[in-house]
Amino acid sequence: MKLLRYSVFLIVIAANAVNGQTNLDWAKKVGARHAPQKTMVWYVNDNGAVNDGVTLNTAAIQKTIDQCSAKGGGIVTFKPGKYLTGSIFLKNNVCLNIDEGVALLGSQNLKDYPEIDTRVAGIEMKWPAALINIAGQANVAITGKGLVNAQGKPFWDIYRKMRAEYDPKGLRWIVDYDAKRPRTLLVSNSADVTIKNITLQQAGFWTVQLLYSDHVTVDDITIRNNVDGHGPSTDGIDIDSSSWILVQNCDIDCNDDDFCLKAGRDWDGLRVNKPTEYVVIRKCVSRAGAGLLTCGSETSGGIRHVLATDLIGNGTSNGLNIKSAITRGGTVEDIHFTNITMNGVGTAFQITMNWNPSYSYSKLPDGYNEATLPDHWKKILHKVDPAEKGIPHFKDVYISNIKVTGAKKAINAIGLKESTMQNFHFDGVNIEAGTAGDVQFGQAWEWQNSQVITQDNTKLNLTDAVAGR
Image 1 (tube, rainbow, N blue to C red):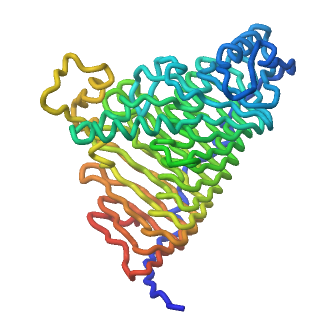
Image 2: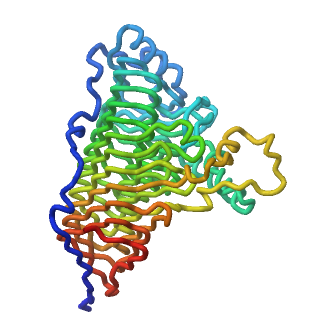
Image 3: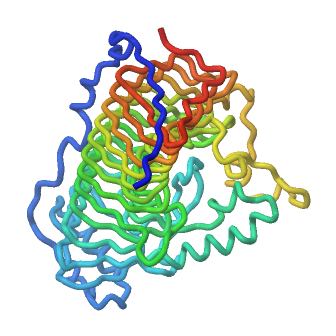
């Protein structure tokens, strides 16, 4: 057996430098405060739903939901079988129970997803409704051990075809918005929502989006989007300008960010100016995907007061991934990333303020008349003024009790001269990686009881970085 040579990068700072963490008492208050209590059961089959996997059941399912809510709430459920449907909209006091032996199949016809006013990838615009929607409601639940199969593969193919057409024209920055694809589950402008036990797969776009909502619990759900292919932008759980959120006991295998926090993009996100805050993510597993925990790239409204604990990343591209762009603005702060195990990840700590320029920065090519452009094009092209307002800020990040094995790179952290990454605290962080990586434009990065062991004998390359005291 060939023995690998390692080098060790170790910085030890006094204990009191790392223990200045902010108070986490708020973490006890996250999640839904209550759930639907009425137990009367309403079967969609009684309104004509057919469990053959072929008949479109949207109207029958929606009628049952409406009847249940009008009578004060209860449980809407299904007899065993497969139910094809387009967009359905849950109502106050309704629990949608997708039990074992039941599969909800998403229509592959975009016409079955009516366009609504929503926000997608940081921009408010018209977009197809999700397969399952909770919009402007309270005291709602989705439970059961059944399957929601969004059947999103045709939407992946549409996106890839459009990318092939848009990229050569210099339109990478807008194709994700023009290639309209339904999300699987949307919670929007709602409160006291519980999502529990269900399995979701093959999302056409994002799987679960919590938007402009508060006091939501997502518990013990399984996401499997890499079924029969790898869908682009099939994020797992996106928490978007929402607060008091609890995500726990979830298992995600997707093709983009696994657990992702967002708060708006560029001029439109700064206009809305709603943060994501008071979020706990615990006891979860991510498999394939772009980030075990990702903050951004939509940071305009700010992301703060986040506790991510007792997580496992197996083969995820990045571990802690904080990303933004110089047109986003906003502050990412008070992030706690603790008790984490990562196995075979790409980069353990990926931090950048200039993420994916071809996507992040918009420029209208010659030959287009700006006056006749769609509204969402105009929003993305709208310049942030003054430009300084678009500079993001990252600070007060607490990273502790981390074990990383088999990573390709330990750290890739690149700030800006005008916006240094401030007050990153590492305590009990042990990384084994192929190479160490870089820290550029960091200020007050403090390490205690931590080490980076590399196969290529490299040490962290520190450029314009100031250590803590």
